[in-house]
Length: 240
Image (tube, rainbow, N blue to C red; front, side, top):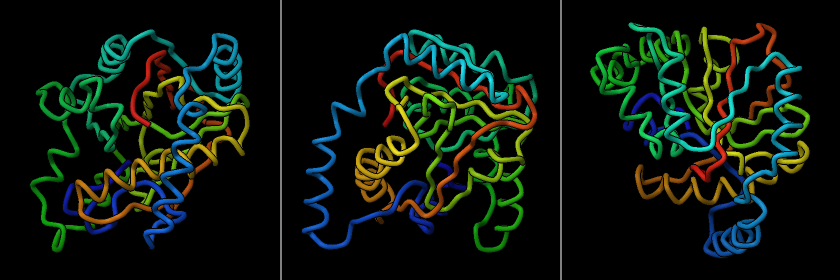
């Protein structure tokens, strides 16, 4: 999740995850682990868990909005983006499923960073591309896990979306299914390794022709600028 554009994704291996995926035996092992993790990591959170997580996030300076459907979440996100804003939507299955990717990249109301990137040459204009991704006015995307203590986990292969999430973007909006809420940090790491990575790895090979990796892993414990980050929780299974 988070690459400059398709040809760069193919070069970097796309965003997410690394652990095991070389021999056929490892592939088989990973697939078995994924099957065992399906029910644990795809179950929507209870109201009690949502409430506890929301309180922890808010205590840590992160805004939270909760919606029943992806359609409601999409409308909310679009309403949060000022007219004319420079927006980078990092690659996300969640955004694609609810139609946000299409809205952001094909509207005249915003300046789409990804649309701009598609006009640049990776070889000769790579530095300009890095700067565009590193400091957009608004970053929209998703993440892999949130703990009940309010810790947010973002995994990446290239790290292209991490700089803007940490500091570069003026506003960060993450759309997150409540199936991504976990009890503790260890559970979040397991969710990434056992559930997210195998699925993203398969997708990356199908779309970009090469495997993915967990090369870089970001943990956000709190936001020093209260309200800069907004997490939009959706009580619907979206993404992975």
